[in-house]
Image (cartoon, rainbow, N blue to C red; front, side, top):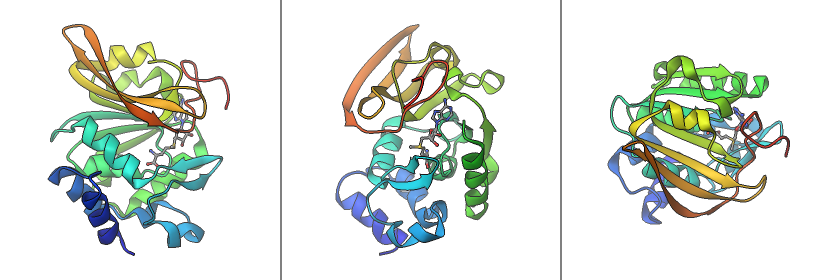
Length: 211
Ligand code: SAM
């Protein structure tokens, strides 16, 4: 299996639905975002450990989130949970300017290193910190995506989302959550439930205290 075959399978199975998402998945090779000992599994549709009890999400889950996020060229996107840097690079290759926040210093460094092979890396800025409070310095954002599970929508993220903006978020407990697409329309939040998911927890001021 190679990256191209993985993309073809994700498209065949209906996870990749748009040309924009497909092109990004073709450009960004998932094998560059896992450690050497996991390379053999890089194209399996499974989450993989990236150390520090964290994971790179399954490619089908990443495709689902990116299709729901509806990124448009030039969008400013805030990602909470850099992890391996894979999703941040995909969004950059979809034409977004990406601000991504990671709370674990070693993963921030892992992601920075992984991104060296991504042709769209110039469009990604990584910061260390608690993403549950958002990142005010670069706000407002056209899109916000959480790649970890939150107990509720963090109020600072609502503030930092532009009117008409879209947020993809997983709400629930520390193991299982439900994916929601949240739209900010005329000062109101419209929440649409997509389905059940299992993400590592958002840890922080507006997250869980600990896993
Ligand atoms: N997007 C990642 C990728 O493409 O590899 C996968 C992210 S992993 C499923 C979730 C990440 O969220 C972990 O790296 C974890 O350390 C991070 N995280 C959890 N709470 C956080 C917080 N408050 N702020 C920033 N990152 C956080």
